[in-house]
Structures are given as structure tokens and as C-alpha cells.
Image (tube, rainbow, N blue to C red; front, side):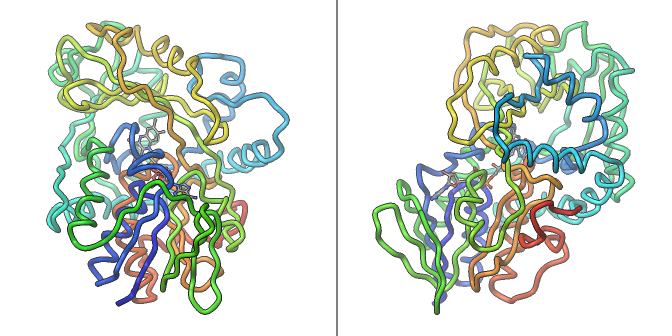
Length: 415
Ligand SMILES: Cc1cc2nc3c(=O)[nH]c(=O)nc-3n(C[C@H](O)[C@H](O)[C@H](O)COP(=O)(O)OP(=O)(O)OC[C@H]3O[C@@H](n4cnc5c(N)ncnc54)[C@H](O)[C@@H]3O)c2cc1C
């Protein structure tokens, strides 16, 4: 039986392991902390192909410099001597053009179109979790502020997505999102999207892997990967574990193990924060405030509020000021919320690449692969990436959906 080790128990690693079992592999997932201990826990849980678009875009040239001097801005880049960080920022900004946006969007679209079906497949195959249909309610202070967002929706449609999208009244929006205040002057409804509770969903995949005879071992850190005749991983304890294949799915920590395997596309932790609050009247669906970049989702009977893009190291301490900024920018748009009654405060690191494309496929080292670098969209794209990487490992064939995600495309991604 083919034995495959997957390092990292986030959405991408778990989905890969699950799909390898479909091909009959004996799988072991090795995880440093616990299932969904990285970015796959406190995120917004949006399965929104219509929003699964490049992060870098031309509006950054105006937004970036103002954000640097606004302590409440969603984008937070610490001013410090950090050549790696500034190299990443320079490359990220080099992709902030209409041409680069179109190139990345073209690379994402096939995966976007197949992403939701990959969740249906997990559930049909025994993963005990469900996705929920939207709609998504989107609010702006006024119509003028909606321009950039409308352009993004139009861009995704131009690349081949059908996105039911309409302007609605505030009263109509309040049917699903009763917390919106009168400060919300322009409201839209986006259909065709879904959402999940991401932590419990990942746990359900992990449980399914174990039920089908696989292993999910937590509390073990992999410190090195090598391949001579067969690949092997070294644990922090010094023990070596051998396998026929190794998949690295270590999120924002991917470069630590993958750089020496020829995967030299830069990955920066784009740290986001979230917490949950009670609302006087519950929302039935996700709510998005694109201007302050706040993404909210119903979660365990409460309302998860998520936001910010903080370019720090993935292991740096939680910054309480970021939560204060989320509250500061969100409060005027929401009513009936006790902001002091926060639970589940969390920071997680999106694995962001300069060109906005993931790193899914073979490394330079035989039988060692990566599945990561999904940035803002590793939850929606994780199951599809896992399915297609499993197919590549088993058959050698690189599916069209992940062809643009070649992990050996170089330090600057698509440029
Ligand atoms: C605020 C916020 C909101 C978001 N909202 C959405 C959304 O709505 N929809 C969406 O699609 N995406 C969203 N994302 C992005 C999404 O969370 C990530 O893209 C995704 O979780 C990445 O999954 P992953 O499995 O690649 O990495 P992770 O979930 O970070 O998993 C990596 C795992 O590897 C483990 N690990 C690391 N190094 C080692 C090692 N050496 N040995 C063993 N284990 C190791 C870590 O402990 C971790 O558990 C959001 C992110 C944030 C921060």
C-alpha cells in the first residue's frame, strides 16, 4: 500500500489526505499543534467563488500609503527594518495592476468554478458536516464607495463566473442582516455563494480520515524533509518517519520546509483577527462591509466578525489594537451588539503569495509536494486543491484547475 505523510492539519492538508485515501493510500497527517490550529480555525468560512479573486489590485496604490498612516486601517504593515517583508511588499505591489489582476483571475477561475462541488464530494463521501447557502449581504456607506467592489464582481463575471448580484433596499437587506444601521447607504445581495463553520468542518474531515483507517497525529513538529530513495520527515524529537510521498501543507510556515525543495515563491503571513459577538437579532447569512474590509458570518449561534491584513510573522504575539480597530470601524454600521461581550478572540495567518496564486504540486525533490499559499481563500479552495493534488500524486497528471498553481514558478510568482 502506498504510504503518504501530510504535514499540517489545516483545510488544505486534511483535504489532501482525505482524497489520497480515495486512491487507497495509507495516510498519516502530522500536525504541530492541533486540527485547524493555523488559519483554518477563526476565518470567515466563506465559500464565495464570486469573491475568490486576487488580493493585489490597482486600488492599492491609493489605499496602501493612506493605510500606513491610519492606525485603524485594515492593512497594517509594521514600519521596521525587515528586508524579507519589504521584498514581499515590493513584489505584491508589482502585481497591483489591471493586467496582473486579470492574469491571476484567469489562473483562479477554473478552480473557483469547481470549488463548491469539492465540498459536496467530501460530504457525499462521509464527512459529517454541511455547507450552507448564502445569500451574502454587502453594505456601503454610500453608492460612490461601492465602485471598487462592483468592478471586482464585474471582473469575476468577465472571467466566466455567473454571479447573481443585485442592488437591494436597506429594508430588504435587514431581512437577512437585521443589524445594519441607517449609516449603510447602499446595499447589495450576492447569490450562489455558501459558508461553513471552518474549525468544526476541518475537525469533521479529520474524523473521517481516522474513521477510514488513516492517522491524524497532533503535537508533532516536522523540522526537515529529505528524499534519497524515498522521502522522509524528521520530527523535532529527532525521529525520522519514512513514506512513499510527503505533502507539505503548513500554511504560512510553508517556506521553512519547502524553500530547500526549490519552492522559492515568497509567502508572507497576512494576519487576520476575529471574534464572535451576540446580536439582538441574528443574521441568517454572511455580511460584508468592503470599505473597512470586515467579513462576518453566523457562527455557533453567534456572529463572527473578522478583518485586518497585518503583515507580521506568523508567530508574533496577538495585537489587541487590531481588535480595537475592527470594532472602531465596524460599530457605526451595526446595531444591537454588545461589543464588550466578545468570545473566541483569535489571530490567524493567511499564507499570502505576491501573485495571489496558491502553490499546489510537485517540488524539485521527487515525491515531495506542496499544497498551500492560498492567501485569502484556502478554505474555499482547500478541498479542490486537495482533490487535484491527490490526483497528481496518484496519476502524475496535473489537472487544468491547478496548472497555474505550480510551486516551482519562482520567487516573484506570475511576473
Ligand atoms: C481573518 C481571516 C478570514 C478568512 N476568511 C476566509 C474565508 O472566508 N474563506 C476562505 O476561503 N479563506 C479565508 N481565509 C483564509 C484561510 O483561512 C486560509 O487560506 C486557510 O485556512 C489556509 O489553510 P492551510 O491548511 O493552507 O493552512 P493552515 O490552516 O494555517 O494550516 C497549517 C497547519 O500546519 C501546521 N504546521 C505548520 N508548521 C508545521 C510543522 N513544521 N510541523 C507540523 N505542523 C505544522 C500548523 O500548526 C497549522 O495547523 C481567512 C483568513 C483569515 C485570517
